[in-house]
Image (cartoon, rainbow, N blue to C red; front, side, top):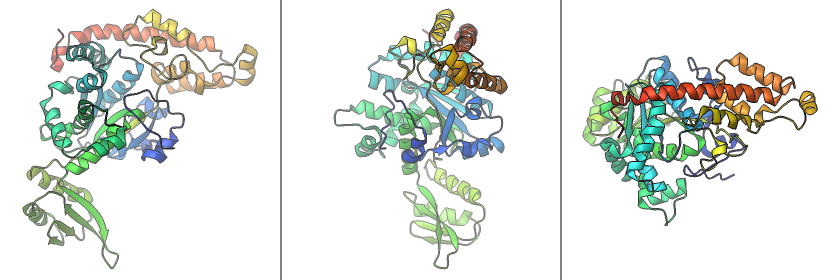
Length: 435
C-alpha cells in the first residue's frame, strides 16, 4: 500500500486495518479487557489501535504513575474532532494520569504562518476555554510551546539525534521545507517526552491520544527517545540456550556500568561497554535499577511513548471534514440553533425512498448523523444499540434520527457554552490569563 501519512493535510482512511500492516499499530481489542471503566470510544471501537497501551493499563490497574499528553495547533475554530481528543485526555486524567496539554503555537507559526499574538488568542479563546469547560482539572498542565523553556531545551537536545533523512522518510520533507517546519516536528517530540523529565517525576509510561494522521509524530518520538537513552537491555541466549540479559551502554561511562554491577543481585559479568546478568527473574526490578543509574549519570531513561488512535469523524455532508467548509463540521462555539440546522441538513445512511428504507433498512455505517450520536450525543449503550437495530431493521426513518441528534446537539452546545463562560473566570487557576 505504501500509505503516506502527513500530519498537516487532510487524510481519509478507508481501511484502518492497513495501518496495522503498514505501520505496526496494534488492534485496541487486544487490551480492552485489561482496562477498568473503559471510555465509550474504547467500548465502541472508535479507538481502534494502539502502541504499548498495555503499559498504561498496567499503571491504571496497579496504581503506578503514568501521564497523558496531547496538543492542539491553534489555527482555527475548535470543533467536535478536537473535543474527541480533549475527552480522551480528561478521561485519562480521571483515571489517575498526570495530564499535559500543549498549544502548538510553534507549529502554527512555522507551518501556517499565524502570528504569535493570533496563536495565543486562538489557543486560549477556542481551545483552552473549551478544555476547561469539558472538565480538565487544574492539577494538570496547560502550556504554549513558545513559553515552555523545558520543551524548547529538550527539543534542542532531541535535534542532535534527528537528521534530515529521517525527517524526510517520516514526513516527506524536501529541500523546500523550512528549517522552522522541521524544528516544529522535533518540538512535538519534546512535547511528548517532557512529562518524563525529573521535575514531573521522571520516566513513566505516557499515552498520546491522537488520530491516525498524527502517527508520524509518535514514530519519530519513539525513535528519538530511544536514541537519547544511555543504556538498553537486550534478551539473549548463551551457547547452551540459557537466557540472560545484556545491559548495553550506548553513551554510559564504565563507572556507570560498575555501579550497575554492584546494585544488580545475582550473577553478573562486566565487560567493556556491557554487563551480562544471569538468573534474573524480575525484569521490572532490573529495568528500575537501570533507569535509576542512567538518571544518576545525567541521562533521561525515557520510556517509549504509548499511543491510542481513533477513527476520524466524516463531514456532515459526507467525505472529509474540512475547516474551509463550515457546513462539514460543528464548532463548539457556534450558535446552537444554527448547529441544529446543520444536523438536519446532514447526509444520512438512509435509502432513496421510505419503502426501500422499510424493506432494506438504513446503513448507519455510512451515516454522519449516526456518527454524531455514537461519538458525542448518546452515552447509554442500550439506547445506541436500539437506534442501530431500528435503523438497520427499517423501523426508524432518518427524520427521527436527525430530530434526535439536532435536539441533543443544540442542548449540548448551550450547556457547553455556559460552562465556557465559567471557564473564562477560572483561567488563573491554570496559570493563564486573557488579554
